[in-house]
Amino acid sequence: MLLIKSFPNLKQLFHLTSLRVRLTLGIAAMSILGLSGVVMWISWQMQSILVVTHKNNTRYIAERFPSDVEIYSDMVSLQEGTQRAIDNLSDSQTLLWVKTPQGNIWAQSQELKMGMRGSNLVSLTDIPPQPDLQRVNNRYWLLCSTKLVVKGVHLGDFYIAQDITKDQTMFLRVMRSLLMISVMATIFMMIAIAWYIQTSLTPLKRMSRMTENISPETLGNVQIQLENAPSEVKELAQTLQTTLTRLSEAWEHQRQLVSNVSHELRTPLTVVSGYLQSTLRRGTNLTDIQREALTTASSEAERTVQLLQDLLDLARAENGGMYFHLETIVLNELLSEILGMVDQYPIPVEICLPEQLIKVKGDKNRLKQVFLNLIDNGVKYSHSPEPIVLKLSQEKQQAKIEVCDRGVGIPLADQTRIFERFYRVDEARSRNVGGTGLGLSIVKTLVEGMGGTIKVISQPHQGTTFTMLFPLS
Ligand code: ADP
Image (tube, rainbow, N blue to C red; front, side, top):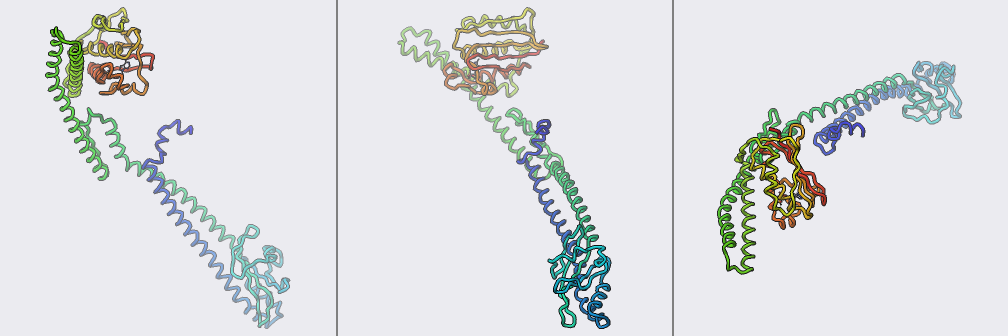
């Protein structure tokens, strides 16, 4: 947890939905399965070879022993013959003994007799007829028993014990080494696979990085170039590039259409608005109903003309066609001028100016448009008579202008979106106060066009502050 916290990329590194993690885990699982299959098969084969050799040896002794006893007993007594046959077939690894049907020892290897080793084997009761590997006192024994019949007489049971501890220990050591090598090979393979997959997916990551910052404005300039990428990824990049080009053309057409329509509609609507206003001014014999209808028509026409003007301004800014007549402006004077322009507003406007003069490079008319637009909003979205305050100050090498109101405020979720075109926090309320939803996007375009920045801080029912920063002249 701590590790993941200190390396946030680790979270991404082990994200189970990522193609890299899935491919690595999938291939690693298959490799581990394959490798462990091979290891198991090798171990099984080695074990079989080892045990089968000793089993054959055991079987050979079991088959030969009765005839040996028969041959020796022709010369000496049966018991003596059995003992000689045992001595003949015993060696350092092989212990033999014969028990009478009553369970007494009839003859046995010298080592057993002298109690040198394997003495506890004699007391074992469950020795099977087929050679079986058993661990007795930390040693590995291949044990088997068979009925001893000599000259048609059942003498008892013949037991064979082969000590294969040395071979078995060596086999286990080899298996342990094989296991360790397999684990190391698996770890190495996983690292190699992860690296290989990571490298193979790099072109996809590059493509995602190239496209993550695409916006409508930059659609046409995007070039997705992928050198040394696999052909499938190149094909995908090509498709994406074609789609982006088509989108860019469609976007351009749409922008052109909005611009042309706004332009074509603005002139006749301005004429209509002019006629309506002059009719209202000069019409002395208008009834109240007629006057009211004309007033509504006139204000709607004016609002639409304003909307068309805003759309044209935005279209011009996007086409790079908005020109700024930059000059040195003393903001203290400009704000005082604006104060004079808004003294008839329903809500009082106050300004707070510093003693020193603050100068910026900007377009006077555009700056006025920005400040008036923000003051207008302050008036539109305030229900109390609390004044709107314009504050000017200097912050580091920047001029800071704040427009503060004590109005309805903007919810946090909407604060990042209010600069978008046609975005309104409360559609019904905004329409009532005559907004178009374009004001703030024009303000932002103008401020940024003059090298400044704008941000908003607001609290519902407390008020809103728009803060602009411009580089000092
Ligand atoms: P509109 O023409 O609708 O006012 P704007 O782009 O100027 O469009 O503003 C977008 C939205 O931001 C408005 O609809 C309004 O909801 C909200 N808004 C802007 N300024 C303020 C303010 N000073 N106080 C509260 N809300 C505001």
